[in-house]
Amino acid sequence: MAALRIDCRRCRHYFVTWDEDFPHGCRRMGFKSRRAPNDEVRCAMHGRTCRLFEQKQIPAAGPRTPAR
Image (cartoon, rainbow, N blue to C red):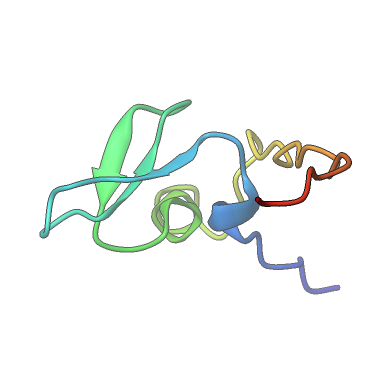
């Protein structure tokens, strides 16, 4: 059975860096990369996906006040 691909942009530890050479980062593992962090982890862990993935908490949209 094929493992589902993890989308790092949906992880709470993912961040975009200002480094043009290494635009993707993982705060939990403490590194920056050219590729998505999960791709680096999969390469280093011989095909295993990241085990530190945590879904981002998206705040619920509250009532909006009309613009004046």
